[in-house]
Image (cartoon, rainbow, N blue to C red; front, side):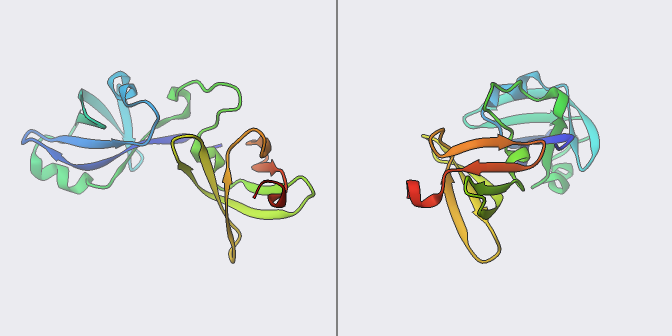
Amino acid sequence: MKEFLVIGQITKAHGLKGEVKVLSLTDDLKRFKKLKSVFIDGAEKNIEGCKLQGDRAILKIEGIDTVEATAKYKGKYLSIHRSEGIQLEEDEYYIADLIGCTVFDELGAELGNVYDVLATGSNDVYWVKNGKEEVLIPALGDIVISVDIENSKIIIKPVSEWM
């Protein structure tokens, strides 16, 4: 499991005092209001202020004090320690832990590795690649049999049964 979790990406400057707009990469935008610090490129930075605007957080981050200073942070990801992540319910997983897991069907056939997880609104979809082929797997209880994050392994029903 990864030690750090990515929670957002700086998209652009906001105003003239060094605030930045952040695209949330979590399910709950309000979590940004509770942040005391984040990691950017491995360096810990204190959060000096937070406002929410639509689907974005506007953060005042320590050491970023001018609109010019924000330019070098555009596109950078904000991370937190796993220990500060939201407590997940049973059968919920961080996307960072799913990416890279090897997917097998219950007959033992290897389908590939999770390349990304797509949010579709009704359910997530695992985008699985094996180098030459890709398959999109709905993350539904009647398709996904088990998820073993510790061993990076996901077992699903054979594709022929649900396609």
